[in-house]
Image 1 (cartoon, rainbow, N blue to C red):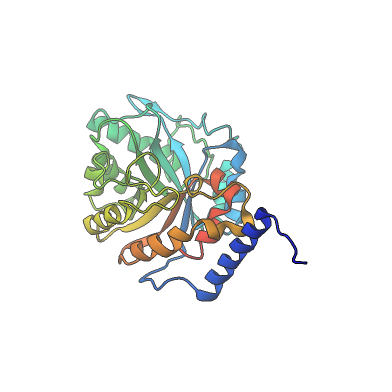
Image 2 (cartoon, rainbow, N blue to C red; image 1 turned 90 degrees about the vertical axis):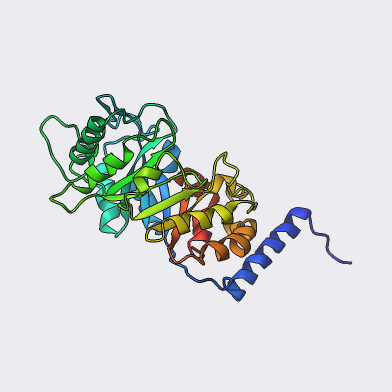
Length: 308
């Protein structure tokens, strides 16, 4: 008499078979793979420490989010990092850098505590970032991460007017005796993103992390590629000399929490449809994952790293 298998067992066998097929067949033919994965860290106290994220071996860049208060003479002092104690973050930054992992600080975010109302404000924020988080020092300026210095600044501007961010970029580029500050940006997927377009037009940004997640129509959710490739092609054409990275959200990937052994089966549309298209671009740079908390729960990057 034939054995009877429960639906869950059959589904597991099917998932494992799909993963085996991927491993045997290899990735679809693509113009470029970098195996670079960037992750946003700092949005949930249950995501683990920064050191733990770096020690996974999954990420080539970690972005601390967010420096969320600036302008009008106010500055983020590290008193809100989603419940994370800042006591050990400085040491963790140094640890990650010792492993060759780039550590960036992202400014902005989803809140409304920031803006650049004037050229002077842009100059003041550049000075504060330099002295509080980068290579500068000034008496009376609090350094939330101690003597640790992040490698650069990411622009994640979701609210407010677009004014003066180009000036902020230029100011930062002149810091460090002309060596400048490494700059990246994380705009929404609709191209151009008016809040950061003027800044990006300066040509000072080495990377653009396009956010194909969230509420925008061009977001990549649960396998739908509608509008994603079209907007991606606009970004790579508009900024041909800048690396463009594909920003995805682990929580929107359709991967259930804890599906560590069979994650690939849920990502077949990413594997077969989206990545082969975006990796045709000469300036494709890699994949950016929002965020470490969701990534840890789904095992998303553990699969995507080999395809990025």
